[in-house]
Length: 365
Image (cartoon, rainbow, N blue to C red; front, side):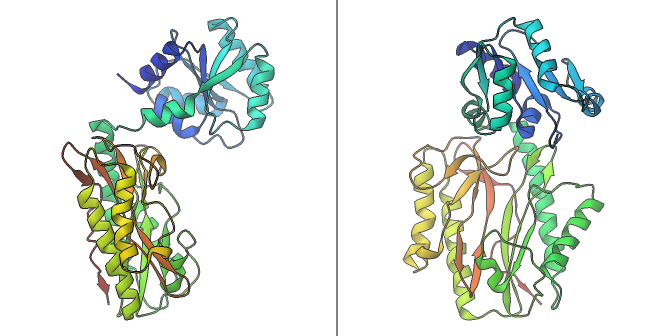
């Protein structure tokens, strides 16, 4: 059963008349077509017992048809009233749709108000966000294959990045080398802004890259991923340029032990909270617990951050087909930051990572 059929079945089971799906990633998940409409209106209108339709900017309609979408696709021009045109198409299929499902995590309040005005008889009880996060939870073998391919691209990106390290070269210049090399291979989209952080810069987990010049004898953190046919990779490695001091080396040693221990433990039946605790206890025992300041991991698939969170308080049991990151980090302001990450998929008796770049500390000369 495909993604769209699952959504239609959920609508029918819950007696919803129509779903309005507008998050671009979710539009792509159900239609196979991705575009960022920016300020323009783009949506899928999905019904429990009738064909869905795509609605968006006129300039996207031919691309939608070429993408393999086999249902109607309607476009609008910038000066036209998009929601009046949507209402016309909806009412041809459902005269007075009263029970709607919307993405409550994603639909801007202004658009929600316009939708209410276009359909004054409607109520909006359905939370499509909750349905979608559950629908994406267990990946199919085909989806996992796409993520394996994205992981291979990330491994190549690490290879390029490590070779690009030179004294005096900036973090930003190393990022440019990575992304240029990927583009030459036909990889045109990163799954998020590539992070390269040298020395104490890495103690700020998500800042960077900066114009900071790389210096010998410090750790360098790389966090990167690519998009392959709509599916993401995400991985982090921290390497040594020259000979960092003993404190930095100890931080890396502890973080590596936490990551390897947790990844070895991940299997069906273990809970997300238990997995977080396995990694966190290693770091806490070593005296760095106060410097591990985020969850152990996040789901991944058509977005880099998906449901579920691998963290304390989440007692969801791991199941085959779940895909998520294992990324402990230790960040000591003014000293150093280390994060080591693989995304994995849970198998029948364990797990398999999507990336295979060695995690043991590599020394770059």
